[in-house]
Amino acid sequence: WQPLFETRDEEEWHAHLRSLREADPGIDWSAMRMDMFCGRLTQPTVFRLSRFVPHDTSGAGSGPGQASVPGTGTAD
Image 1 (spheres, rainbow, N blue to C red):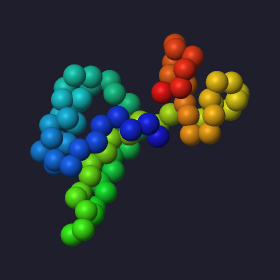
Image 2: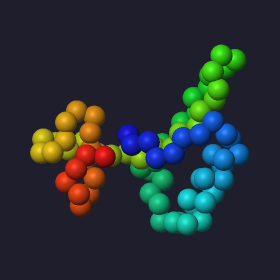
Image 3: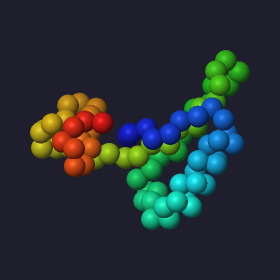
């Protein structure tokens, strides 16, 4: 999973999701993951949007935990 956006501000979180939906209605939301990390009283709550990046089974150019960025031949 590649993190795309993270914030502690719930209003900013909702505004970002809204702007993504308006800017690109063709986003494949089935490849996205929305997490809310609840810190309870000791840590702030964090909202994170991540995109699924398939594992490169060819073994070329990517090490563990890395994914190739299409068209660049480099890891992100």
